Amino acid sequence: MSKHRNTKIVQAGIANDKAHKAVIPPIYLSSTYNIDGIGKHLPYEYSRTKNPTRDELAAAINELECGVGACVTSSGMAALTLIIHLLNPDDLLIAPYDCYGRSYRLLSALSEKGHFKLRFINQYDDKALEQAFNENTPRMVFIESPSNPVLRIADIKDIAARADECGAVTVVDNTFLSPMLQQPLNLGADIVFHSTTKFLNGHSDVVGGCVVTSDELILEDLEFWANSLGLIGAPFDSYMTLRGMRTLELRVTRAQENAEKVANMLHTHPKVSKVYYPGLKDHVGHEIAASQQDGFGAMLSFEVDGDASSFVDNLNIFKLAQSLGGTESLINHPASMTHVSMGEEAREKAGVTDSLLRLSIGVEHIDDLINDLRNALDNAT
Ligand SMILES: Cc1ncc(COP(=O)(O)O)c(C=O)c1O
Image (cartoon, rainbow, N blue to C red; front, side, top):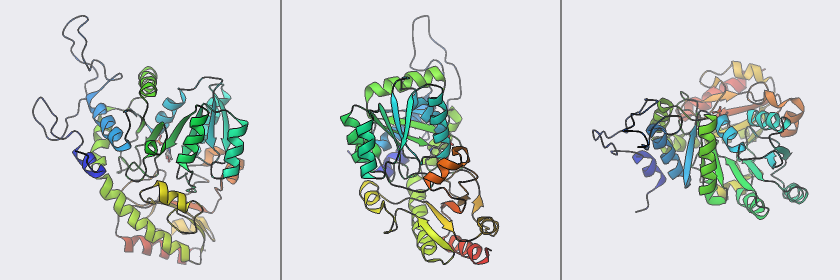
Protein backbone atom coordinates (compact mmCIF):
# COMPACT_ATOMS: atom_id res chain seq x y z
CA MET A 1 0.00 0.00 0.00
CA SER A 2 1.54 3.33 -1.02
CA LYS A 3 1.74 5.87 1.79
CA HIS A 4 1.84 9.66 1.84
CA ARG A 5 5.22 11.29 2.54
CA ASN A 6 4.04 12.58 5.89
CA THR A 7 2.89 9.14 7.01
CA LYS A 8 6.20 7.58 5.90
CA ILE A 9 8.19 9.96 8.02
CA VAL A 10 6.00 9.80 11.10
CA GLN A 11 6.08 5.99 10.91
CA ALA A 12 9.81 5.59 10.13
CA GLY A 13 11.18 2.76 12.31
CA ILE A 14 8.13 2.79 14.59
CA ALA A 15 7.62 -0.46 16.56
CA ASN A 16 10.46 -2.27 14.75
CA ASP A 17 12.39 -3.08 17.95
CA LYS A 18 12.90 -6.85 18.16
CA ALA A 19 14.51 -6.84 21.64
CA HIS A 20 11.86 -5.06 23.78
CA LYS A 21 9.15 -3.93 21.35
CA ALA A 22 9.94 -0.27 22.00
CA VAL A 23 7.68 1.91 19.84
CA ILE A 24 10.38 4.54 19.25
CA PRO A 25 13.55 2.98 17.77
CA PRO A 26 16.25 2.75 20.46
CA ILE A 27 19.61 4.45 20.11
CA TYR A 28 22.70 2.25 19.67
CA LEU A 29 25.74 4.17 20.90
CA SER A 30 28.12 1.21 21.08
CA SER A 31 31.09 1.60 18.73
CA THR A 32 31.64 -2.17 18.61
CA TYR A 33 29.67 -5.43 18.69
CA ASN A 34 30.41 -8.85 20.19
CA ILE A 35 31.13 -11.33 17.38
CA ASP A 36 30.19 -14.99 18.03
CA GLY A 37 33.42 -16.49 16.69
CA ILE A 38 36.19 -16.00 14.13
CA GLY A 39 34.73 -15.69 10.64
CA LYS A 40 31.14 -15.47 11.98
CA HIS A 41 30.32 -12.00 10.72
CA LEU A 42 27.41 -9.90 11.97
CA PRO A 43 25.38 -7.21 10.17
CA TYR A 44 26.77 -4.71 12.69
CA GLU A 45 30.38 -5.05 13.87
CA TYR A 46 31.90 -1.56 14.05
CA SER A 47 30.00 1.73 13.99
CA ARG A 48 32.14 3.59 11.45
CA THR A 49 31.13 0.94 8.93
CA LYS A 50 27.50 0.40 9.98
CA ASN A 51 25.34 1.48 12.91
CA PRO A 52 21.65 0.59 13.49
CA THR A 53 20.59 4.10 14.55
CA ARG A 54 22.34 5.72 11.59
CA ASP A 55 20.76 3.11 9.30
CA GLU A 56 17.31 3.95 10.68
CA LEU A 57 17.79 7.61 9.67
CA ALA A 58 19.29 6.67 6.29
CA ALA A 59 16.28 4.44 5.53
CA ALA A 60 13.83 7.22 6.47
CA ILE A 61 15.48 9.87 4.28
CA ASN A 62 15.93 7.40 1.46
CA GLU A 63 12.22 6.60 1.53
CA LEU A 64 11.32 10.30 1.39
CA GLU A 65 13.71 10.98 -1.51
CA CYS A 66 12.64 7.80 -3.38
CA GLY A 67 16.19 6.44 -3.67
CA VAL A 68 17.73 2.99 -3.50
CA GLY A 69 19.85 3.83 -0.47
CA ALA A 70 21.44 6.62 1.55
CA CYS A 71 24.58 7.49 3.52
CA VAL A 72 24.24 9.65 6.62
CA THR A 73 27.21 11.96 7.11
CA SER A 74 28.52 14.19 9.90
CA SER A 75 27.53 17.44 8.10
CA GLY A 76 26.27 18.80 4.80
CA MET A 77 29.86 19.57 3.82
CA ALA A 78 30.79 15.94 4.61
CA ALA A 79 27.95 14.89 2.27
CA LEU A 80 29.40 17.02 -0.54
CA THR A 81 32.94 15.76 0.27
CA LEU A 82 31.64 12.20 -0.04
CA ILE A 83 30.00 12.88 -3.42
CA ILE A 84 33.06 14.50 -4.98
CA HIS A 85 35.15 11.47 -4.05
CA LEU A 86 33.34 9.72 -6.90
CA LEU A 87 35.44 11.89 -9.26
CA ASN A 88 38.89 11.18 -10.68
CA PRO A 89 41.53 13.87 -11.38
CA ASP A 90 40.63 14.14 -15.10
CA ASP A 91 36.87 14.31 -14.51
CA LEU A 92 35.13 17.63 -15.03
CA LEU A 93 32.62 18.90 -12.48
CA ILE A 94 30.19 21.63 -13.58
CA ALA A 95 28.76 23.69 -10.74
CA PRO A 96 26.63 26.85 -10.41
CA TYR A 97 28.56 30.10 -10.00
CA ASP A 98 26.24 31.17 -7.19
CA CYS A 99 26.10 28.13 -4.87
CA TYR A 100 26.40 28.17 -1.08
CA GLY A 101 29.67 29.94 -0.24
CA ARG A 102 31.27 27.04 1.65
CA SER A 103 30.38 24.60 -1.19
CA TYR A 104 31.99 27.07 -3.61
CA ARG A 105 35.10 27.19 -1.39
CA LEU A 106 35.33 23.39 -1.00
CA LEU A 107 34.93 22.70 -4.72
CA SER A 108 37.45 25.42 -5.63
CA ALA A 109 40.04 24.32 -3.06
CA LEU A 110 39.89 20.62 -3.97
CA SER A 111 40.01 21.28 -7.71
CA GLU A 112 43.06 23.54 -7.17
CA LYS A 113 44.71 20.57 -5.46
CA GLY A 114 44.05 18.48 -8.58
CA HIS A 115 41.24 16.25 -7.22
CA PHE A 116 39.08 17.01 -10.29
CA LYS A 117 38.53 19.70 -12.92
CA LEU A 118 35.96 22.39 -12.21
CA ARG A 119 33.92 24.97 -14.12
CA PHE A 120 31.41 27.31 -12.56
CA ILE A 121 28.58 28.10 -14.98
CA ASN A 122 25.26 29.91 -15.20
CA GLN A 123 22.61 27.16 -14.95
CA TYR A 124 19.64 29.52 -15.14
CA ASP A 125 19.95 30.64 -18.73
CA ASP A 126 19.19 28.33 -21.62
CA LYS A 127 21.89 29.77 -23.91
CA ALA A 128 24.56 29.64 -21.20
CA LEU A 129 23.63 26.03 -20.46
CA GLU A 130 23.70 25.08 -24.14
CA GLN A 131 27.15 26.64 -24.46
CA ALA A 132 28.46 24.98 -21.29
CA PHE A 133 27.39 21.52 -22.47
CA ASN A 134 28.72 22.16 -26.00
CA GLU A 135 32.12 23.26 -24.73
CA ASN A 136 32.52 20.67 -21.98
CA THR A 137 31.98 16.99 -21.32
CA PRO A 138 31.31 16.85 -17.62
CA ARG A 139 31.47 13.73 -15.48
CA MET A 140 29.31 15.35 -12.82
CA VAL A 141 26.83 18.25 -12.78
CA PHE A 142 26.08 19.90 -9.47
CA ILE A 143 22.81 21.79 -9.00
CA GLU A 144 21.63 23.80 -6.01
CA SER A 145 17.99 24.77 -6.48
CA PRO A 146 16.74 27.05 -5.04
CA SER A 147 20.21 28.52 -4.75
CA ASN A 148 21.61 29.97 -1.55
CA PRO A 149 21.08 32.90 -0.97
CA VAL A 150 19.43 34.46 -4.06
CA LEU A 151 16.94 31.61 -4.61
CA ARG A 152 17.56 31.15 -8.32
CA ILE A 153 15.75 28.16 -9.79
CA ALA A 154 17.54 25.65 -12.03
CA ASP A 155 15.46 23.42 -14.30
CA ILE A 156 16.47 20.07 -12.77
CA LYS A 157 14.74 17.88 -15.38
CA ASP A 158 16.34 19.73 -18.28
CA ILE A 159 19.86 19.79 -16.78
CA ALA A 160 19.66 16.13 -15.72
CA ALA A 161 18.63 15.17 -19.29
CA ARG A 162 21.57 17.13 -20.76
CA ALA A 163 23.93 15.50 -18.24
CA ASP A 164 22.52 12.08 -19.00
CA GLU A 165 23.22 12.56 -22.70
CA CYS A 166 26.93 12.96 -22.05
CA GLY A 167 27.04 10.22 -19.40
CA ALA A 168 27.39 12.61 -16.46
CA VAL A 169 25.98 12.14 -12.99
CA THR A 170 23.55 14.85 -11.75
CA VAL A 171 23.78 15.88 -8.10
CA VAL A 172 21.23 18.17 -6.40
CA ASP A 173 21.63 19.98 -3.10
CA ASN A 174 18.03 19.85 -1.80
CA THR A 175 18.77 21.55 1.52
CA PHE A 176 16.58 24.64 0.97
CA LEU A 177 13.36 22.70 0.35
CA SER A 178 13.62 19.22 1.93
CA PRO A 179 12.05 16.16 0.26
CA MET A 180 8.66 17.42 1.44
CA LEU A 181 8.78 20.10 -1.28
CA GLN A 182 11.12 18.70 -3.95
CA GLN A 183 12.28 15.22 -4.94
CA PRO A 184 15.19 15.62 -7.39
CA LEU A 185 15.60 11.86 -8.06
CA ASN A 186 12.07 11.84 -9.49
CA LEU A 187 13.15 14.69 -11.81
CA GLY A 188 16.04 12.65 -13.22
CA ALA A 189 18.91 13.44 -10.84
CA ASP A 190 21.16 10.54 -9.77
CA ILE A 191 22.18 11.88 -6.37
CA VAL A 192 20.47 14.22 -3.91
CA PHE A 193 22.07 15.54 -0.76
CA HIS A 194 21.14 17.57 2.30
CA SER A 195 22.58 19.50 5.09
CA THR A 196 20.25 17.77 7.58
CA THR A 197 21.35 20.52 9.97
CA LYS A 198 18.57 22.54 8.32
CA PHE A 199 14.93 21.58 7.63
CA LEU A 200 15.28 17.81 8.12
CA ASN A 201 16.45 18.03 11.73
CA GLY A 202 14.64 21.33 12.00
CA HIS A 203 15.55 22.38 15.54
CA SER A 204 19.03 23.94 15.12
CA ASP A 205 20.58 21.46 17.55
CA VAL A 206 22.39 18.97 15.29
CA VAL A 207 24.94 19.35 12.48
CA GLY A 208 24.51 16.55 9.94
CA GLY A 209 24.14 15.56 6.32
CA CYS A 210 23.03 12.77 4.03
CA VAL A 211 23.41 11.56 0.45
CA VAL A 212 20.71 9.57 -1.38
CA THR A 213 21.03 7.95 -4.79
CA SER A 214 18.80 6.20 -7.29
CA ASP A 215 21.67 4.03 -8.60
CA GLU A 216 22.88 0.81 -6.91
CA LEU A 217 26.44 1.15 -8.29
CA ILE A 218 26.75 4.74 -7.08
CA LEU A 219 25.45 3.63 -3.68
CA GLU A 220 28.18 0.99 -3.45
CA ASP A 221 30.83 3.64 -4.18
CA LEU A 222 29.31 6.10 -1.71
CA GLU A 223 29.24 3.47 1.05
CA PHE A 224 32.86 2.55 0.34
CA TRP A 225 34.03 6.18 0.58
CA ALA A 226 31.84 7.05 3.58
CA ASN A 227 33.40 4.16 5.50
CA SER A 228 36.95 4.64 4.17
CA LEU A 229 37.03 8.39 4.80
CA GLY A 230 35.03 8.12 8.04
CA LEU A 231 32.56 10.81 6.97
CA ILE A 232 29.71 9.12 8.85
CA GLY A 233 27.12 10.70 11.16
CA ALA A 234 27.12 9.90 14.88
CA PRO A 235 24.36 7.66 16.36
CA PHE A 236 23.15 10.33 18.79
CA ASP A 237 22.93 12.93 16.01
CA SER A 238 21.08 10.40 13.83
CA TYR A 239 18.60 9.71 16.62
CA MET A 240 17.98 13.43 17.13
CA THR A 241 17.57 14.06 13.40
CA LEU A 242 15.01 11.27 12.99
CA ARG A 243 13.15 12.67 16.01
CA GLY A 244 13.14 16.13 14.41
CA MET A 245 12.08 14.77 11.02
CA ARG A 246 8.83 13.33 12.35
CA THR A 247 7.36 16.85 12.37
CA LEU A 248 8.88 17.89 9.01
CA GLU A 249 5.56 18.26 7.24
CA LEU A 250 3.98 20.30 10.05
CA ARG A 251 7.00 22.59 10.32
CA VAL A 252 7.51 23.10 6.60
CA THR A 253 3.81 23.75 5.97
CA ARG A 254 3.57 26.41 8.69
CA ALA A 255 6.95 28.02 7.87
CA GLN A 256 6.04 28.17 4.19
CA GLU A 257 2.67 29.80 4.92
CA ASN A 258 4.53 32.40 6.99
CA ALA A 259 7.18 32.90 4.28
CA GLU A 260 4.55 33.66 1.61
CA LYS A 261 3.03 36.35 3.82
CA VAL A 262 6.42 37.83 4.71
CA ALA A 263 7.44 37.89 1.03
CA ASN A 264 4.20 39.72 0.09
CA MET A 265 4.70 42.29 2.85
CA LEU A 266 8.36 42.95 1.91
CA HIS A 267 7.43 43.15 -1.77
CA THR A 268 5.28 46.24 -1.13
CA HIS A 269 7.44 47.90 1.54
CA PRO A 270 9.03 51.20 0.40
CA LYS A 271 12.34 50.43 2.12
CA VAL A 272 12.78 47.11 0.27
CA SER A 273 14.14 47.38 -3.27
CA LYS A 274 14.02 43.69 -4.28
CA VAL A 275 12.56 40.45 -2.90
CA TYR A 276 13.85 37.02 -3.95
CA TYR A 277 11.12 34.45 -3.30
CA PRO A 278 10.20 31.88 -5.98
CA GLY A 279 6.55 32.08 -4.91
CA LEU A 280 6.28 35.67 -6.18
CA LYS A 281 4.92 35.85 -9.71
CA ASP A 282 7.66 38.28 -10.79
CA HIS A 283 10.45 35.87 -9.73
CA VAL A 284 12.25 34.75 -12.91
CA GLY A 285 12.16 31.11 -11.83
CA HIS A 286 8.52 31.14 -10.67
CA GLU A 287 7.17 28.92 -13.46
CA ILE A 288 9.89 26.30 -13.16
CA ALA A 289 9.62 26.32 -9.37
CA ALA A 290 5.85 25.84 -9.64
CA SER A 291 6.35 22.86 -11.95
CA GLN A 292 9.16 21.03 -10.13
CA GLN A 293 8.44 21.91 -6.49
CA ASP A 294 5.50 21.06 -4.24
CA GLY A 295 5.71 24.49 -2.62
CA PHE A 296 7.90 27.58 -2.62
CA GLY A 297 9.58 26.96 0.72
CA ALA A 298 10.43 29.02 3.77
CA MET A 299 13.60 30.77 2.59
CA LEU A 300 13.71 34.23 1.05
CA SER A 301 16.14 37.08 0.55
CA PHE A 302 15.74 40.79 -0.01
CA GLU A 303 17.65 43.99 -0.62
CA VAL A 304 17.12 46.60 2.03
CA ASP A 305 17.08 50.20 0.85
CA GLY A 306 19.22 51.83 3.52
CA ASP A 307 21.59 50.67 6.22
CA ALA A 308 21.37 46.86 6.60
CA SER A 309 23.07 47.01 10.03
CA SER A 310 20.60 49.44 11.51
CA PHE A 311 17.69 47.32 10.20
CA VAL A 312 19.15 44.14 11.72
CA ASP A 313 19.85 45.90 15.03
CA ASN A 314 16.18 46.91 15.24
CA LEU A 315 14.93 43.31 15.00
CA ASN A 316 13.66 41.57 18.08
CA ILE A 317 12.29 38.15 17.03
CA PHE A 318 14.53 37.41 14.00
CA LYS A 319 17.98 36.50 15.30
CA LEU A 320 21.13 37.26 13.32
CA ALA A 321 22.75 33.85 12.86
CA GLN A 322 24.32 31.39 10.45
CA SER A 323 22.17 28.42 9.41
CA LEU A 324 18.50 28.05 8.53
CA GLY A 325 15.57 25.65 8.58
CA GLY A 326 14.88 25.63 12.33
CA THR A 327 11.59 26.36 14.06
CA GLU A 328 12.89 29.83 14.99
CA SER A 329 13.16 32.67 12.47
CA LEU A 330 16.70 33.74 11.57
CA ILE A 331 18.27 36.52 9.54
CA ASN A 332 21.63 36.27 7.80
CA HIS A 333 23.89 38.78 6.07
CA PRO A 334 25.41 36.53 3.35
CA ALA A 335 28.14 38.99 2.24
CA SER A 336 29.76 38.96 5.69
CA MET A 337 28.60 35.52 6.88
CA THR A 338 27.68 32.43 4.82
CA HIS A 339 29.19 33.70 1.54
CA VAL A 340 32.24 35.58 2.80
CA SER A 341 34.60 32.78 1.73
CA MET A 342 33.58 33.14 -1.96
CA GLY A 343 35.58 36.33 -2.26
CA GLU A 344 34.29 39.71 -3.41
CA GLU A 345 34.44 39.11 -7.17
CA ALA A 346 32.50 35.83 -7.11
CA ARG A 347 30.01 37.33 -4.66
CA GLU A 348 29.36 40.26 -6.94
CA LYS A 349 28.81 37.93 -9.89
CA ALA A 350 26.43 35.80 -7.81
CA GLY A 351 24.39 38.86 -6.78
CA VAL A 352 25.38 38.70 -3.11
CA THR A 353 25.45 42.44 -2.40
CA ASP A 354 26.17 44.15 0.93
CA SER A 355 22.50 45.11 1.25
CA LEU A 356 21.24 41.55 0.70
CA LEU A 357 19.65 39.87 3.72
CA ARG A 358 18.46 36.26 3.88
CA LEU A 359 15.54 35.13 6.04
CA SER A 360 14.85 31.64 7.30
CA ILE A 361 11.21 31.83 8.26
CA GLY A 362 10.18 29.85 11.32
CA VAL A 363 6.88 28.66 12.74
CA GLU A 364 6.12 31.59 15.06
CA HIS A 365 2.82 33.46 14.79
CA ILE A 366 2.79 35.38 11.50
CA ASP A 367 1.62 38.65 13.10
CA ASP A 368 4.70 38.74 15.32
CA LEU A 369 7.05 38.09 12.37
CA ILE A 370 5.45 40.78 10.20
CA ASN A 371 5.40 43.31 13.06
CA ASP A 372 9.05 42.64 13.85
CA LEU A 373 10.16 43.18 10.24
CA ARG A 374 7.91 46.22 9.70
CA ASN A 375 9.07 47.87 12.90
CA ALA A 376 12.75 47.28 12.04
CA LEU A 377 12.28 48.61 8.49
CA ASP A 378 10.33 51.67 9.63
CA ASN A 379 13.07 52.53 12.14
CA ALA A 380 16.07 51.72 9.92
CA THR A 381 18.26 54.69 8.94
C1 LIG B 1 22.52 24.91 0.67
C2 LIG B 1 23.52 24.38 1.67
N1 LIG B 1 24.22 23.27 1.37
C3 LIG B 1 25.13 22.76 2.22
C4 LIG B 1 25.38 23.34 3.45
C5 LIG B 1 26.43 22.78 4.36
O1 LIG B 1 25.85 22.11 5.45
P1 LIG B 1 26.53 21.93 6.89
O2 LIG B 1 26.64 23.28 7.50
O3 LIG B 1 25.61 20.99 7.58
O4 LIG B 1 27.89 21.33 6.67
C6 LIG B 1 24.66 24.49 3.81
C7 LIG B 1 24.90 25.15 5.10
O5 LIG B 1 24.45 26.24 5.36
C8 LIG B 1 23.72 25.02 2.89
O6 LIG B 1 23.00 26.13 3.17
